[in-house]
Length: 41
Image (cartoon, rainbow, N blue to C red; front, top):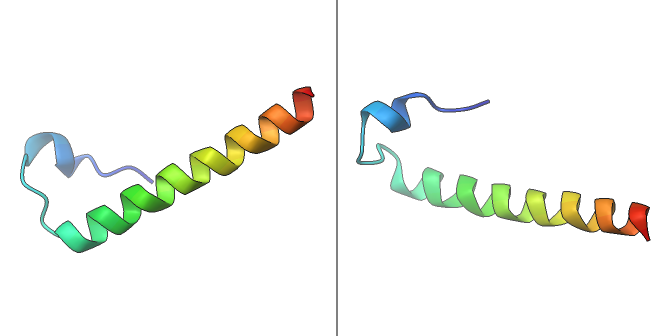
């Protein structure tokens, strides 16, 4: 689920939530990358 309001609003409304959400996305991407690499290997 994306947040289209980010493009129209440069300043985050919920800085803490945005920071936590970003960390979750980074961790999730790392997990997906690790799974993909493990699958290829």
